[in-house]
Image 1 (cartoon, rainbow, N blue to C red):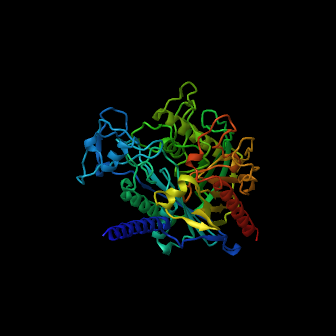
Image 2 (cartoon, rainbow, N blue to C red; image 1 turned 90 degrees about the vertical axis):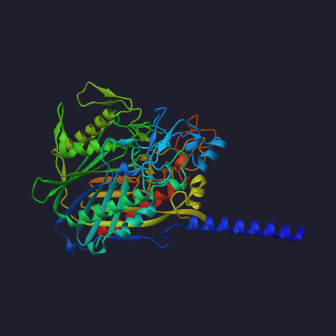
Image 3 (tube, rainbow, N blue to C red; image 1 turned 180 degrees about the vertical axis):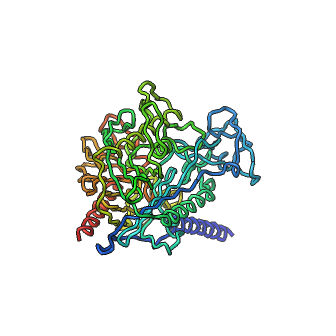
Length: 545
C-alpha cells in the first residue's frame, strides 16, 4: 500500500514537472519564430525621379467609457484597494508584503465583474487614468522613389515589443508594395501601458489590455496605408540645430553625455512652399508631468508638434509651417529627462521646475521654436539627392538577469533563442536613406555616448574592458542630417556601454546609479552597436555601387 502511495506521489510530481516544463517551453517560444530580416534595397539609378511623400494620422486615445472607474479615497492618484475589492493575487501579494491594502474601491462600469481601467505606463504601476487631457496619435510618413517604398510610424506610447511590430507589418495591404515598415514609440510616460509592466495594483499578464493593443495595431495599419496612398512629389529641406541643454534636458547618470542635436526635415509639395510634413527627432523622456499625473496626454511632444504645425503665439512667437509634424524619439538612455530642469517660458520671465502642463507646454513650444527658426535660416539644405533606400537586419541580443527569466516565462518581450549556448532575444536594427537624410533605428533606449562619443572605462567598473561601442555611431553616418530613432520596432530597455556597467562595489562614481535594472544585460550595447555599424556600412556600400 505504501509503495502504491509513493508511486502515486512520484507520478503526480512528474506530471507537475512535465506540465511546468511544457508551460515554460511554450511561453519561451514566442510568436513569429521564423520571422527574420536581412536585406539592403536601394533600387536602381534608372528609376530615380521625384521623391514622393505622404502622411496620415489616427487617433489612438482610448475610449474611457469602455473602462472602469475607481474611487480614489485618499486622492493619491494610485489604486490601493480595500481587501474586499482585491483579487486573490492581490490578497496574496499583501500577505507577502509586496503591496499594501488601502481605502480605494472601484466601479464595475462595464459590468464584467473585474476592475479593468486604463493603466498609465511609466514610473510606477497602479496608475488608473482619470481622464484625457489631449489626444494620443499614431502618425505615419511614407517615402517612395527609385523602386523603394518605406513607411514609418511614431506612436504616443511607452513602447511596443517586437512581436507586435511584426503583427502590424503582416496586417498591411500587400498590394501597396511597401518594402519595409518601421514603428517607433515616443516612450510616453503618460499613455496606456502597451507592455504589460505597469498594469494593475499587482501587474500580472491578466491585466494586460489586449483590446487596446489591437486598436493600436489597427491604427498603425490604417495610418501606413493612408500615408502611402496619399504620396505626392515632394522637395526636402534639412537642418540640424545644436542646442544648449540648459532648460531642455539633463542627464541623471554619469558620465554626462547629452545629444544636443535637434534634427529637422521639412517636406513640401514639389516646387511650392506648401508643407506636407515636418519630421523632427531628439532625445528626451516624455515625463514632464511626473508619476502623479492621472490624465492621458502626449506630454511636451504634443506641444512641439502643434507649435510646428500651427505656430507659437507671441511673445517671441513664430509662424507655423502647416502640414503634419511627426516627432520620432531619439536617444533617451542615461537617463535623459526634464524632471529636474528649470524650463523657461518664451516670455523670458517665467520658469517652470515642478511637474505641470505649463512646464510641458513651455518645453514643447521652445522646441517648436528651435525647429521653426532653424528651418527658416539661410543655411537650410535642400536635398538634391532624391533616392530612397532601406536596410533591415534581425539580430539576437544576449539576455541576462530578470529580463532573461521574464522573457523565458513570456511575461515580457516574448520568445527566447539559444545562439552559441547563450539565451538571446530577437530584435532588429534598420537604416533608412531619404536623399541626404540618414536614419538609424535602435530597439531601445540608447545611451547617447554610444552615438556621440564619450564612453568611459574607469577603475571600479564591473568589466575590465575598454570602451567597446566605438566608433560612435553618428560619426559613421553619412547624411547631411543624421537621425537616430530610439524604441524603434521594439523596447529592449536601456542600452548601456559595457565598460560603464556598474552594479558591484567599488562603484565608479562612489555609489550605484540607476540604469542596469532596466537593461537586458552588459552585452546588449556591444551587440546592437556592432550590428548597427555593420548595417550602416552595408547601406553605404550599396549606395556607392
